[in-house]
Image 1 (tube, rainbow, N blue to C red):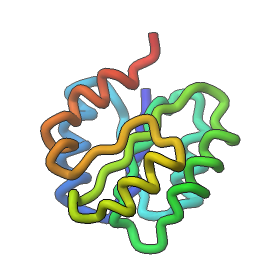
Image 2: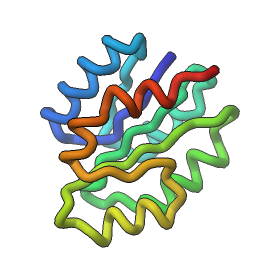
Image 3: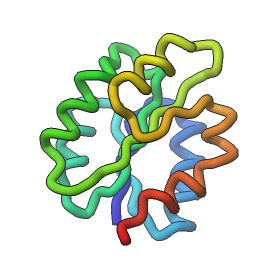
Image 4: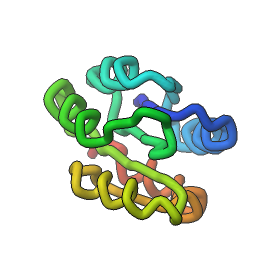
Length: 119
C-alpha cells in the first residue's frame, strides 16, 4: 500500500515516514502538485496527505484532479496551522475526507493511516 505526502515540511515528512512504516505503507513524498496527482493515480495508493501551507496550493483543483484520476477510492487528508482558518475551510469545501489542524494531525496521524487501509 502507498500514500502520497504533498509537502515541503521536513518535520511533517519525518513524522509521516515513521507512521507509514509502522502501518505498512510505502510513503511517496513530493512538493509538486502534478507529481502528487500522478502518484495518487496508482491503484496501490490509498491516501493523499496534503500540507495546506504548501505555496501556490489550489486545494480545490488538487482534489478535483485526484478524484477524477484515481481509479479507486483514495482518502484525502489535509492539515494546516489552526490560525489558517481560511485554508482549513477551503480544504473542507473542496471535498477533503478529513481536515485537521497541525496539532490534531500530529496526534492522529496513526488513526488517519488506519482509516485509509482498504478493507
